[in-house]
Image (cartoon, rainbow over all chains, first blue to last red; front, side, top):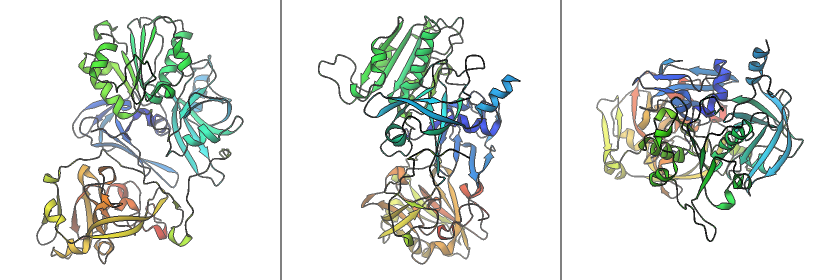
Length: 84
Length: 258
Length: 199
């Protein structure tokens, strides 16, 4: 069953450029939980207003979380085994 | 030096002024945007399929940001096409309130994945699949193909609720040589409609999609853009027809106008 | 300084000021916001557990629905600044659920299908302040809003009202759940505008 509100890494390309300083949608994200690798553009992304959550396409584990706390962007990449 | 300056601009918000606006359908409007430092032909102009982030600021300081696909081809005046979502906050503003001369902020062009370039050796035919306003970046790809004089055969499968909701209908009504537009109207059809009248399914893809065997090695075969359910079902259907998953490019933000 | 986009404003409804916490605006919408995909646990596999007491207590869906339930009307406040007034719910009070457990812990971590967690003091679940809600707006709680059942703790920011809740883990010390880990306030009182850690 598909959630209509789910976006993908394309939708956060601007945020990623701001955070990483370069175009990231074709970077390969490897999941720290299951090892699946996909391009950032193809990751399911959720934006519930509190933050942005990018998950593994295969096992849905959280890979990246971005929040904005008092105008500072906080980035958590702990779910990734690698990104590049 | 020039390359660094361009990259800096891509990363920052620039003030844009709304230029001429065109109502495409009752719910969809195209807005030309004038951005002083928009990359031009000589410094890495935008690529077909990319998008911009738009930011609006209210007079109490409240800001809202959304991503919109670029509707224009590289080299054409920058334009976005916005669909009004009834429960949205930004799209009702852009499609009903905003006027020529109003200001907003733009960041971009953005995106390195869902892009198409007329390269050498890209002879393999292309399938473009659009769900609703997902047609916007695909129209930019078609315009780029024409501007570049490419002869890559293209089929655009365009799913829309009704004929009245079809965006760019007059442009697609006169497709350039080598381009075929196939519509499916999912909710209502004009009298005498002979075309598809249902959501895209595997049987329709089997009839419309190029055979996977015609692909040129290394080139994307298909670009699919629209709401999540459309993108997932089309991408899965193409994979079942033998398209390698890595050669089907997807962009799920057709419905995020908001 | 960003230029003002003439005529752009946030959609907001009029509301009495004493119903609207600082920095909030009232909406008639009920936005569907989630950090992950909507789970679809069949009721036959659903359970609610309270762990960390002297014994783990678990209810199946049938057992849970056999508990006394109440309807309530309340306002809800999301940290993303929207508030929705007079929402109606049906659920089982945490007073009823926690009364079935022998414990002396003072904090809980609520956990949900899909891995979401959030934390609060036990005291904020007692005294008629919190429910496990299975009904909304006169009908069953829809999956997109957290059904079959979600935690409902309306006096705190709504991220504490965990969707798809499956239980509570009682514990001695407080500690951050999902959003608290990423910078949101450990307690989250909308009336003191406790949005972020350190507020």
